[in-house]
Length: 496
Image 1: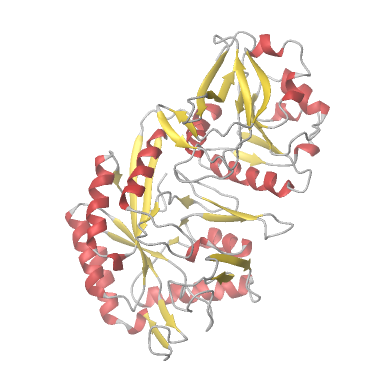
Image 2: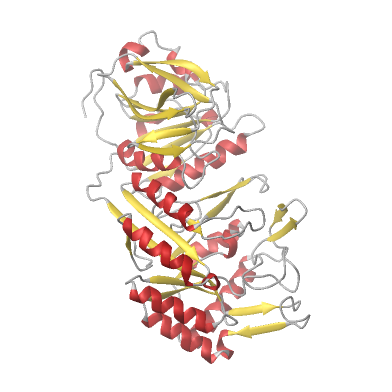
């Protein structure tokens, strides 16, 4: 494209540079933001490098298709070479929130060249972002946003706007001019399923120049925590209903049911393996014929013979991380890797789980981490030994793993930070009552989120469902998702 002042040069490579603020006590925030952005770019055919902005070297921008700078540390003094290169480059440049005044003040002609001015940081509590005529959430706990004023609409365009519902006050949220994009905050902070994060995820198509003509709307359903102690009559009813609605589905299978403390068995330990459950095997075969695809969901989805943190029972507890929970405050108090965590340990667990499936005449090429939480080492193993994983992923600051965050994806990520292909889960599940501090989630909540996701041209509505809830919620959810224009598809490691 040709603009009044600059002509974008042809991309020199498929490489993308992400720069982040590592300075200050919250350098870990910048690092995790860079991982989240790199993961999203993993949806596209780009190679990502993400060093601290403090390590920037002169003319480095010219090596990359696009450069992103995540301004997460207020008043971080940026390298002069980075400022000068940004002002003179013809490469694509995306700037987030803080320290933009260092750029505008370095050029007396900035406003004339780009058609907008930077007015400083705005602390107004904007509670939404409007994008494609859709209102997306913006958490007021993170109020600070860069305030932009457009003075030449021939040069600068407001692609999305931030709005305060009560007053109707608005400011540009994303501005595009020449080769420069400015995002008023960092959309990876305080994000939710209905968040302005969705707008940015869609805008990556424009920013990276990726042509996507056909707007797809795909839905994915998985039946969660299916183990050898499950009521097979319920499972068959699920399969029959979904088959009648022409809905393929995933089955998250736990090969070993364990209740080592007898939590549900009058204090008597109980263990059931899939190989010792012929009726369960027959039921899974039945479900496969009705459109089900088996994915592996841990070995036992619990850890050892202890509460980790709730009951020690399969499906309740964590398997690959040690977790403590305080019921008085309904909050998790600690997370840490297991002492025995190692490549040999995880390999033994996964090999045993796969052997049990194989002995029952099943295979699984897709993995789902129990409760989405495992160590870096474990996640790297899953990425290496499965064709894809499904769910949300946790990412860690390498210098202090207590700093971590979970990311959900609105579309398929072909390669995340761990090297995994990630199939999205972006709607959550029906949760009739508050559970472990997580608020209840209704069918209407899931449909609301699915509707918001339609702002993305490659829209997904991926959810999971616990069969013990019965058919009533499912009979509302499936037609509701279809009514939004989504088509249910089978889970597959080749999905794009």
